[in-house]
Image (cartoon, rainbow, N blue to C red; front, side):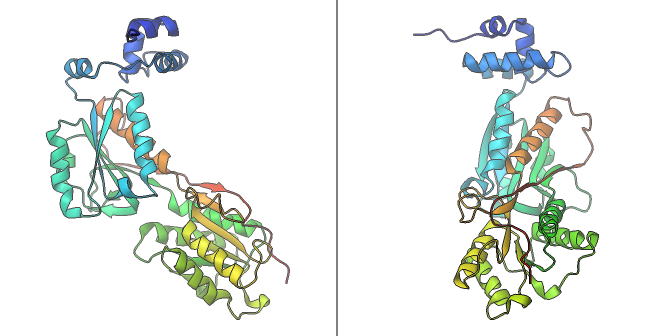
Length: 349
């Protein structure tokens, strides 16, 4: 049987001291070990399949090195599980493990779930939601370092740092992409009225038009919902029985599933995408946006980046390396335009 690698083995392979290995793998490398040496240490540890002894670390640091994550339904959602994946990437890289509890959108279970995680002596807590939304922060989260991911404190004076996508800029840049292609009649299927993300995307749509001195037709904006059938129905209202001169040349959607419905309606009406109609999505949903025919131009939600940023903020607070510790703040993670085949120049009329 092969001998288990030790910290000394890692140090020899990386060409550094054993103390440098300890600092880096205990999350205290910044400011103590050069960046190049940190990279060599992590690479050597991965090659040797080495990880610090969790029990020894706990005894030394008086920490469990466990992070509790409370999710409203992320664990069973096809959308936002990447937030937890990104958070777990950072936790593991710094010698922590994560434990996740999912309340399946039953907020009455929040307080008891937090207490259960605290009973396990977690070092910190993260609250993750599917879709941007305000939450009532469980009081137990104020007893240890905590952070919010894809949600924000509903209290008048927020007490926790939150990490959220920059939905306003995302909506604006999606619209700017269509305007740059020459579209001046852009319809919007805007999601649900009660969604903060949907409202911000609509505002971004309005801001882009205002900056470009492009007129907005209010009858082109539908808060349609989120599903494929809503996209289909909304598009049929916009296009069915309308002359080419009276149709919008592009439809911007608040998510990719709406965009699927738009594409189905366009096909039903004999319209070519993007020659007759450009379609813009939002989310860059896996196995939908890139597999559509034609493939969907969309704004990618930075879910994994949100998880990484939130976990980094939390671990910095736990380990005392967060310069902003003790303050309430916001981290906005930018969305990214992914250009594919569903958008093109506005047709001439």
